Image (tube, rainbow, N blue to C red; front, side):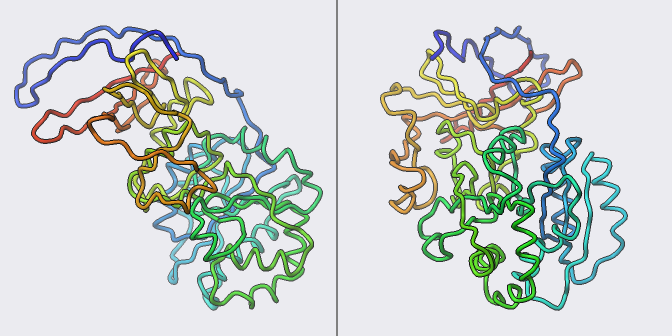
Length: 379
């Protein structure tokens, strides 16, 4: 906990009047952060994703944040029925600093089988130095490649390994079974992909009516002796609508997911602060004015004080019932606006001087004005 407040002064601005605004100087705060290495060699990683060209193009800004200029490779299985030339999208990926290979999906198999077939394509396109192959969705985001590599380094890549996490929702686990859920990322060592390759034809026929990650699990269990190794910091994030309780809990996820569908978030903007403060994305600080800052997600003021356990996850999403206790629990109840005033992340940019400016907004209710918080991060 810091002895200083986060908020020191405010200024009212009438957007209907074109008067010049008086700019107050910033009042600096010094915060401790974890530094990131200047360069991460991820050339031992390959990532595979099945998606459409439109969704791929929309996902380039997110992929660029964690996949560019680090040696990792992206293999894209393009599932469009009518595929025009791939040269334009390949050029955009190259401009973004992403090493990518695009392959047209087999149109004669079911969608789930196409998603499973990405494993075969990864095996066929592996490089001599490939150690791990990750199966992801086009809305999977890895905030820290160094942390991802450190997690995988706990395992011998020369042995068969199947690594991932369950859904946070026990209902989903009950429905689909005990497996690595693909949205959080599924990681296979190269020897395991060779074993899957040897049984690929039979496995493909097993799963005409299943999900791709279900076919993968069944294939691994039917054709190899490898079992799932759980790493719970991979996150499927099967949470809908208001996910602030998850992101404000002090979590440092290896992966995040569903930010384009079940809830809305801009990780490529939020993650810009890492340019200045390294491994500080989602890092929390508690200030003297009963305010908690979750970096690049929210600043929250608690007018009645912080009289609760900040380590417990607040059940803010739709239906935060006991089905989440095994993964995120015990939960604490969602707080009312009278007890919790939130400024949510809106946008960020890297300034010409290398500093990162963030904007957080609190939407006024019942006729009250909106409020904007500006934070500038410098080294």
